[in-house]
Length: 423
Image 1: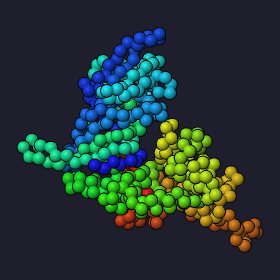
Image 2 (image 1 turned 180 degrees about the horizontal axis):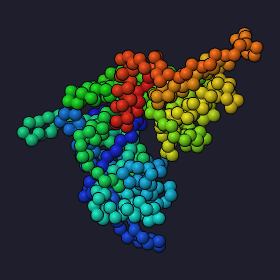
Image 3 (image 1 turned 120 degrees about the vertical axis):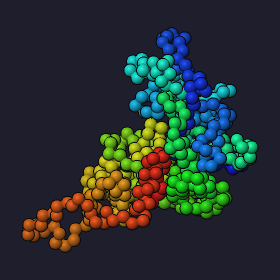
Image 4 (image 1 turned 180 degrees about the vertical axis):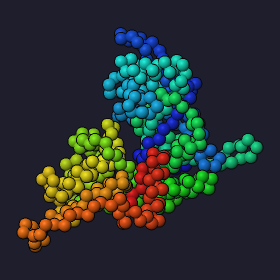
């Protein structure tokens, strides 16, 4: 048995209506009305994720897996995992989550001032909503091998994942409580494999599902027979080599390493995203492009050029193309410019430009802030008009093997909702 500790990609699990015990009950409080009751998860109940005999595994949730997150978190109840349809929230006093002998119990107020809450009640009574689900990050789990008897009387080895600690994001009433197709099961297996970070486990499953082999690029290039752990950036060995890598990352100062992530052109509010960002070095590094070499790595004041959206739970998400473009403008002298060293200015530009490239946007050029002799002379002849932009740039459209692989991985990450490998 090997216990892994990490926080990586969000996973989701579902329960059918009969197991979730979903019901609309009268609210016995002073306000009257009705409440939603059910179970988002059941303890010690073994579920097949994918095909356990070939490319999947069995999974169960240990009692106490949600204890820490219930004490510290602020989960929401949604409909079909859609953040637009917020039914209730812990901090608002409208959602109560608790562990009992059976599992994760959900007790939610139902405000019919929200039109979709009225629809939810009707859909539950008509059995159109047929179960519950929850979104979570695995913090600790155990993977073990067990022998099971197959339908033909033979024995086979299967892997069992026992979730010991999870960080709860949300619970949902769902229309499809069970996986309706193999593709959805495959996505769930892929999420768990990336979270685990075990290359051997991926390779074994890729014998039956070759597309899973691409996941190897998401967990890093190092073998992990030493019992390493997965991180959001990839696989990190548990040996001295891994410690050295963590030390090197912690000592990295100035411009932060270029990396690829999903992007968004949604409206951008830098101060609002910064306020949701926790005072944690890993999150601060992921959200910014530069850290003060002499600053405190755990303080926001040490960081500049925030360009990632941050969720209300502090999770660092997609890169903002608006923020990246604005930040390049600052590098070029807009809004008072920047005082970071020139070599860092160029490296930060590459960081921001990479996100824009991932979004299919050609980054503005980085201007030189030091004039060459003659450049500022106004008596020069009329400058030649800029060449009309072409539909394609030769350097941008030439795709080698590495570019093709990056595009495949971008598609895979989007398909499974997985973290992107660092470049």
